[in-house]
Amino acid sequence: MAKILRLGAAIVLAVFMPSAVRADRDGFNETVRVIEQFYHVKHQNIPVLARAGVKATRTAAKIRGGDYKRLAEVGSVRVAFFEDQTFDSHGEIASFKAAIQHALNAEWSGLVQTLAPKTEEQTYVYVRDAGKHFHVLIVTIEKHEATVVQATVAPDILAQLLKNPDEMGKALTDEATLSDP
Amino acid sequence: MKALFRTFLRLAPLFLFVVTAHVVTTAQTAKLQLDQLDVLANRASETVDVKLDEHLMQTTAKFFSGKDTDDAEIRDLIKNVKGIYVKSFTFEKENEYLPAEVDSVMSQLRGGGWNKIVGVTSKKDGDNVEVYLMSIGDQIAGLAVVCAEPKEFTVVNIVGPINLEKLTQLEGSFGVPNLNLPPPKPKSER
Image 1 (tube, helix red, strand yellow):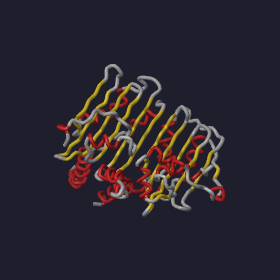
Image 2 (cartoon, each protein chain N blue to C red; image 1 turned 45 degrees about the vertical axis):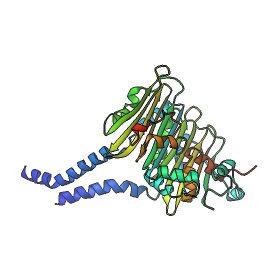
Image 3 (cartoon, chains in turn orange, blue; image 1 turned 120 degrees about the vertical axis):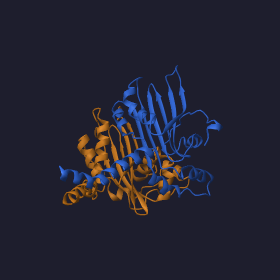
Image 4 (cartoon, rainbow over the protein chains, first blue to last red; image 1 turned 30 degrees about the vertical axis):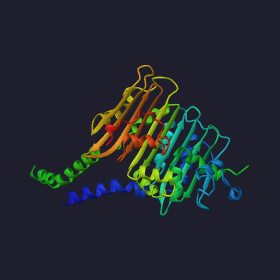
């Protein structure tokens, strides 16, 4: 009987321990760290005051059917910038994708990933439950810059964004980082 | 020896449960295992990977209101869909991927309850489009489209009760690319 109990305990530990250990990871910081380690680059945060004037962009307005409504919940946006640095995966772009996936715990679902190794352009969109809302994590990488955005969105906004998941990352990143000209 | 036999007898129900659960989940799910294709990403000039799982589909489906005609159509289309999975690889040169590298997907479609309902081959362009349907009893459990071209390989896997007509309506939305599928024949509709 003791053998069976030990076997049961081992199965439970094997199934639940990895997720429990990783449950305290928030996703944003881990993702930024993976980019820094893989590409040997350093990020910059946008000062809060610089974001105070953030307004709608054309993409965001288009998704909302013309009349702009904010996509992300107020005060929920976190942004990390990587500017004027070189992003070169040396033909191992799939390894970077795997590294990000490994860094995020199982709560995060990979929604959209687009990769173009030659230009080093990559977009990753991850989603996880956040009670009545959803957390969305977007990583955008180009040859000389990258952005990591995490935002909280309402389910009705997420539903509209899902209609065109390819544009989803751009819409939220634009909202978080650009101002109207 | 007797002790070993007794231990085996005690563990037999657990073993049987694990094996049965594995058989049931692999036999009755229309979700294809596609992650092994990721190795193609290093060689592809462009890769697109879309995963919309059941939880996400069902959570957001109710937010497509019936007031807006487009939204109502979308809600009807996706309300029973349990997942949309797309992987697409575009290459700069022809034959940059080998048939053996995508055989892991094709072998899943050759068995496990999948039936090929459409197959279009162009000898001139080397394009090859195949549509597979999985049925459990009278119900459609899922659909898979494989487009194999010399410079492109795309797999679309939709889990849930969906037919070819509905798939055509989903083209361009929810990450489903335009597949240029032949129009469905009325008789083959279920």
